[in-house]
Amino acid sequence: MRKYLVIGNPIDHTLSPKLHNYWIKKQKIDAEYDKKKISQNDIESIIFEIKNEKLNGLNVTIPFKKTVIPFLDKLTPEADKSKSVNTIYLQNGKVVGHNTDISGFELGIKYCKYDIKNKVVLILGAGGVVSSIIIALKKLQVSKIIVSNRTKSKAEDLKKIFNEIEIVEWGVTPNFDMVVNATSIGLNNEDGIKLNYTEIGHGKFFYDVIYNPRETIFLKRAKLFGNKTENGKMMFIYQAHQSFAIWHKMLPDIDDETITLLDK
Ligand code: ATR
Image 1 (cartoon, rainbow, N blue to C red):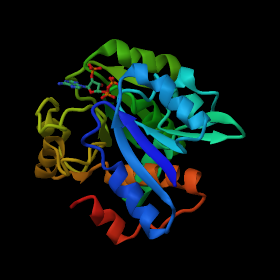
Image 2: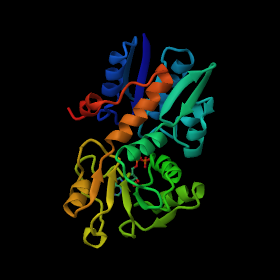
Image 3: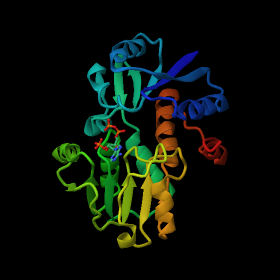
Image 4: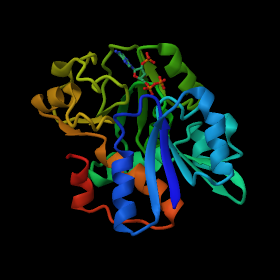
């Protein structure tokens, strides 16, 4: 039986095992997918299990997407550009790190049929997933990317890699067409995003990377003010789908059953 694992800390919230095991069963693959809470000190030995094929694939989540990189033999161009790895596998005896968050975000936006080309996008946050979002937004040909983060130096670090981004102070609301919440505010029903909703008006697109809870305060309030909203569920499904394709060399359907599975 082939074995797959998602590693992170915390890890309780993850729906990856549910989704991967659903597809594994549906495709009648002899495999299982589990989750494991780890610390940074465990990474070396877990990567070794990929090398000696005790494990066949890994997903990596918060806060290890960057810190796994020194333990890998090779990065794909996506992982290298974003300096972020969420999918690991063995290829020709080498442990390879890949990033499926970029295509996950891109396909998620395409799925919700928002015409993003030439739009101004504000990203709230500068954590692990933001470099992937910036790369995806560039591919989608937005006209401007503005980043706002509580700790400004982290936004400035992103600007060193992506010179074209603009940075605004945390709490400042610039003009935008679309705003992405990429902070962890909202995971616990916190209310920490200070946007001037009256000034923003209506008809904008509010996107939250968080999918559990399904509707954060950020999205609830945006809706109240007459804006379009979307959570990160399809991004999550698509990133998992891309990992699945790499490991099992097949693409299961993303049907209604798959989509509603995560709501249960
Ligand atoms: P990491 O920063 O380790 O990559 P992350 O979960 O990917 O972790 O990112 C968390 C993001 O949510 C960060 O942008 C963080 O802002 P800081 O860089 O200032 O820490 C943001 N965040 C979390 N809680 C927040 C809060 N209460 N107010 C504002 N931003 C918050």
